Image (cartoon, rainbow, N blue to C red; front, side):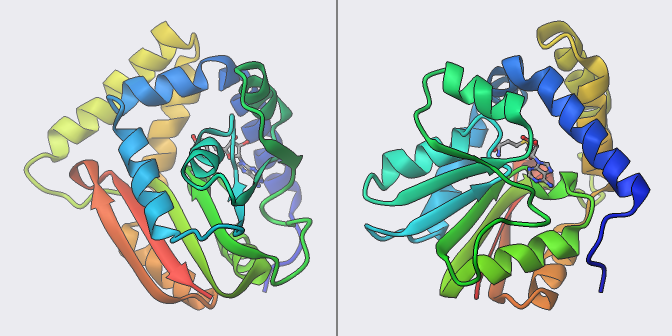
Length: 234
Ligand SMILES: C[S@@+](CC[C@H](N)C(=O)[O-])C[C@H]1O[C@@H](n2cnc3c(N)ncnc32)[C@H](O)[C@@H]1O
């Protein structure tokens, strides 16, 4: 079992933080454009699957600008939502854009919370970015209370089918072009494409979640199989 970061993992984490710091100012706009606004409905579904009750403690890990945590607070005003990330510029952008959330600096691989603390742990587009996915899942499992819910939204490697050429064109040409012209960061959005193509298939992530200890694990594919919402219970 791996518990410490290697030199190259540190390096990858630092590069990742620097990249998110660069794209922070246009991050939310790019999300809406790349998904034609559909990310909002995926986030809503994610929150429904978290089955939040008034008073629930919810962690949004890899919160970025706080998009998901904001929706958690809007849909469950009596919940206590914590919005955690390790890139300050992303959280600062959220603050500057008027999000008054409980922002908190935290590394998903070493969560600064005691075990059995949260009723739900949610994340949007975090998992494919972490340097040690199994550890990230174990950490999320650890801080959940018994019967607490885990729900994650992320890109997923699509199955090959008739749409594959169109999906590849979209991932390899359209997204980096949008990143270049809208955010001025073509390279960063090229990374998004690569990280999607190199990430796990939905079934593989579900298996890893089970190995981390989650039960009743399931997933739903979205957007021609390029996005998935995964869920499970401690
Ligand atoms: C693609 S953004 C997602 C932002 C937001 N959750 C959303 O739904 O749009 C990924 C975020 O994960 C954060 N992140 C990546 N690795 C992390 C880690 N090990 N610990 C904490 N945050 C991490 C990045 O800083 C970035 O803000």
